[in-house]
Length: 398
Ligand SMILES: *Cc1c(COP(=O)(O)O)cnc(C)c1O
Image (spheres, protein in one colour):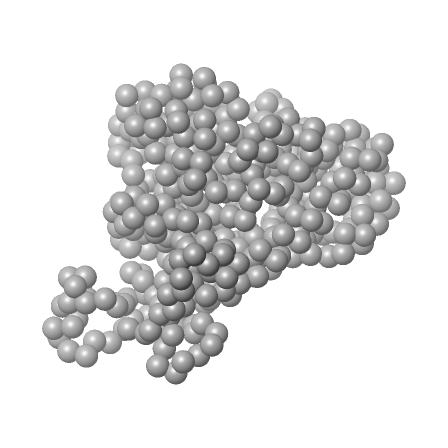
């Protein structure tokens, strides 16, 4: 078992993101090692028995745990203020495990209807196939959550801000309804990022991330994270992950572990850039609407002031001319590239109605606020003036 760095618990988040969770091998490396191994050998048969009994600390086999992945998990748990964390192969593997592990046939789940497409599929289509009922509600309506509760309701699920409309939900109020109902609240915190929103402190039981987004932050690896209390994570969820096997590759874990060192710098700068771009967009005449969590005219500005410590790196805006107007803008962008990914150092733009939200009917899209002229913009690390110049020449073509 390698030696571990256990810095003082009173260190600030930036410091913990650089040091916490480090497991140092006998070579004393400064940078965390990549343990690209499937298994681990034992000194003797009794030690092997001890590892399987959990009486001898250490690793056995890559599906059950890996030293590099363990460093990512404990560093992320420290940053999030969670007792435990498990890494998964993708964000959707994290969402699926968080939703499937705690429920059985006959249980019921309540979720906000404005969700990332695949999350909505798990709740609306996948869970019911296994006898788990689900109800989708308007997440902004606290009474709707309460009305949806049944005696068998086990889980609440929400995403805030939501994709792509950046609608914000009152996590503390929804957590209180979940608690009353004896249900656990799962929050997908991708759009807020761990830097700007702390769902566990607001009363959530489990937080999930697509680490693919801001945690990698440079468009390289897919990954996911599930965080919560020791009790919740180390029982059903850990067992589900170990037996079904959607583990994160140690290589991807290493990339993300090193990326955590720069997360506050990157996401802080991206949010600063997003604020400048959103302010500029709001001052232009062409966009018919600009939605940005940092703006005072955001529909849930009052909740944002209470529950987020920064805006996000995402902007949604509407151009005139519906789909045709949106296509003109996207096709005219030169620096900002068209991609449905987000959280990258490179700024990315997408037309949700024809891509991420294509499979919904126009009526459902309208109810979600995804109009034909809506555009989603993920702001990266370029100079903000270059991004504004690109948008300026592209808007002129709408
Ligand atoms: C991307 C994303 C996911 C899924 O993550 P993957 O890593 O692509 O599996 C889930 N929720 C939200 C909000 C996302 O943006």
